[in-house]
Image (cartoon, rainbow, N blue to C red; front, top):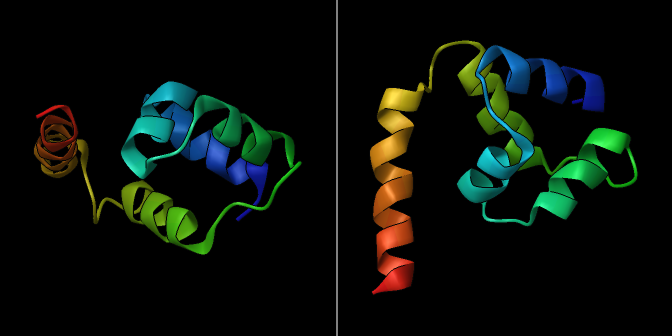
Length: 75
């Protein structure tokens, strides 16, 4: 996956750098480094984002899972 393709999916899905960072468990800085091409985009992040782009994974399915993970981190 190219940085340009990642950014286009993020725009289409209305995801900020911070949103993607939270979803995949990295820092905002790491997402920025993917988008600038400073670091390669991990394969699993690519697969996940392609799933979102193709409608296989949607935010309605994803949101409760991310919320549960974050709740577990806080508790």
